Length: 182
Image (cartoon, rainbow, N blue to C red; front, side, top):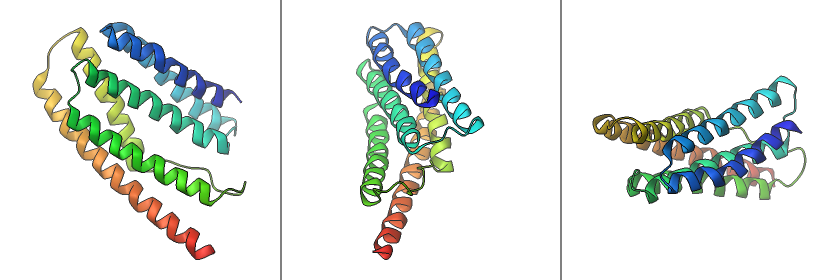
């Protein structure tokens, strides 16, 4: 299906995005990242508009997002733009999400399992993380806005922490429900 193909394209785009970032070609990185963002918006819109939602898509789309965002954040750290503490916080949250999702899907290996839907806090956090990446790239191309950068780091850290806690609570509830069904 087309939405899944767009998710795969986003995964593939991660490679040239990271290469451009590591070569400090920030305008190219920005353009590729924006294109990847368009594929993300399109796959979600097409899936909902034409009822192409699937279990594979509910796994592939967030996986593509995780691969793209994690790789980009790692690249931003590597070139000295993103602080280590924020990178680690983002990665810990992602580990919580992936571990919980993996445990949930391994515990429910039948087709009737509900599609994995991101929480509202997680969607908001993802938007903020994308905004941070765009801001940092634009800042490298045009101007230095260090005062805004520190404030944005605090906002991202807060939303990332809240989102991670929200997912921990979600996975704990799902695990308890799974155990109660047995």
